[in-house]
Image (cartoon, rainbow, N blue to C red; front, top):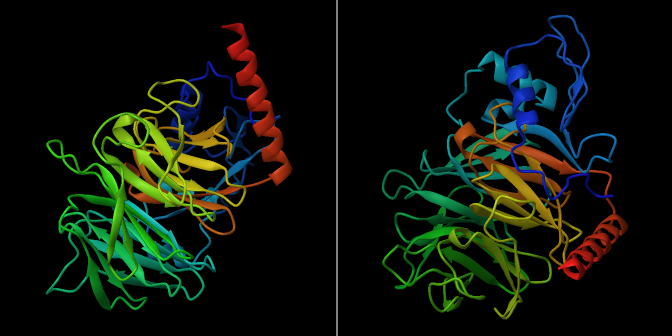
Length: 391
């Protein structure tokens, strides 16, 4: 089975939190198996024990492994593994001027070497190049500083598109940080997440709007800034309408996924903007949401959704069936507190903006093939049919 989680299990399980609390007390010898897999050895004080954090729990096959955290440019010069993240956390490591505070947007270069992090609190986008071991700060300069940056996306030339929430536009920079242009429209009120469909030359901007407005929609532009239209005609909870949409994602086929946050669901649209399906609904059970935000797909078209309320990430099969979740509320490495954005690179590494822990958590998909996803999808469909038959 893809997961061992039952539909009765709630999110942010207390067992994981208890384990994280024990870890945070600085236990020198960690050897326990709880809702996640921790493998540790008693080591000399100067040697960190090797710790492995994965979901689901043994004896089921692990599908998601925690890899590392990204906190500042110090992480460029050393491989901050899961074990090292724990001891960095316990030691209270002092951060540099490139310190991540409030990560609200993440993008990764095609070669996976560079990670772009939009920091809302620092009014900047940090670029961490893990190949060259360098860091760059894009802030617009003193004359035109970034205004509350949120979503970030890259085009084929690796130009950087940044949603400036306070300025109601999307600013475009080249990879050196030089400002190129701004993209906006008279109807754009509160841009949050952005995504680029490179083959079709489209920029999608999630416009969260305001309480008193009807502009709860996804605006569509070409990459030069021409306004092409929008998805979502009015505020509401019917298919194709939104209530404070926050993040948007485009898969390799041009399908558009929108985190419809206050409707507690993710909506999927085809490349022409036609509604296809919804993932999840409001609730605290398996496959339900509180406040969904970041959304992305991996190479198998599995859909991942960050839930800021439950502080976890849920995974759905392409046809919409829930597969499993990972994470949970906590401060220890691998856990989350009010996460926001989610990005997946071409190697199926997952980057989650862990906002209240002031870091980016990195995970990876493991032990999974297309056949596994198909089998899990078929099993989920069968379970759903059986459940319907009982009603």
